[in-house]
Length: 150
Image: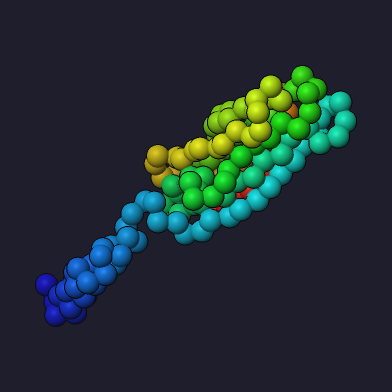
């Protein structure tokens, strides 16, 4: 090992001991490169706002993505119109979900929970709220973007 490398390794080790391990947190997949908060709403096929969703999405440089559990991530069906609200996540060039479903028969909103559990080189991640059985890749106007991150 060169003196320069030894100094760097020693500095990281000392910082980890003195800082409670914070110096090593950069290697953790749960370390976010960025978190993004957004809201979205989609109209009911019968008119008016049919559903709303709020989410905080975190994505790191290794391609891990998750909904921030320290934030309130919810979906709410707004009308008794026969169309439930569903939430989907686009990650690693494919859709996941529905990760949550809310119908007006439920009291209030439904919490959203999602994480990728692995990395991907495709960093674009997006959360959608949809009405009924529509999916974002249907392109029928019954889905809306809630939040996206890269």
